[in-house]
Length: 243
Image 1 (cartoon, one colour):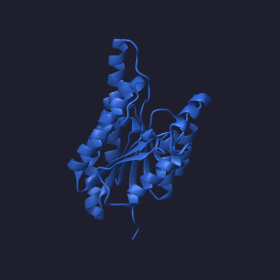
Image 2 (cartoon, one colour):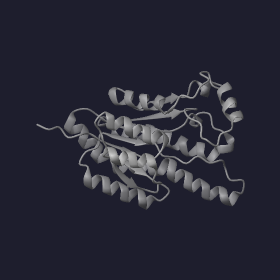
Image 3 (cartoon, one colour):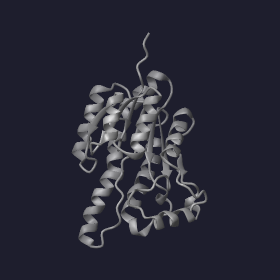
Image 4 (cartoon, one colour):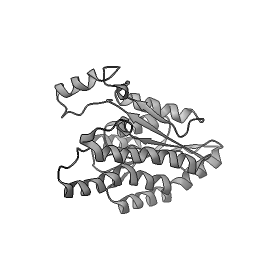
């Protein structure tokens, strides 16, 4: 009898960590729903591998709801949800602009993930009942949830909200769904980062090298394999949170 491939939903799938996560899951035999905002070359690669790519604007609650409806209509059960997408910006300097920025960052970084966790909960629980093992949600947060950067206070607060939601949903969905968070540190610099900035970050990191996206992907796969992990907030930061 043919066994149906397990389903994973990944946000921010069109580049960087989201893309690498999708590739790793597909190599494990997952049927991936890749949620994206911007079409990229990487997304075309995912399509070529068979991923179901769904456009969504996480800043728009209605867009998120429509994406959830599409997934639920097509996938009866879901084994994994990865809330990876986020927006990272320094705080606006004007009070008026700051209020609008806060609304946007909280929608993208905490409310949209909450919508997805709530909207896909029934499918995640159904998978657990059918397979006899809990499904999994992994929220990608940040080491800034514990040690905020005041220049990015709004971003840090929005990720701290997601960290708290991780704990709430771990309680709410147990024992059918495990909910954990991974807190990345300096895993991969952006092309816009100067050499001076990179060197400064590395001097403040116990393991003074970029961890790479694979460091987070490996931790996510470890969570998939370990059914006794829930409500865990796991740093993957080379020890930078201690400095």
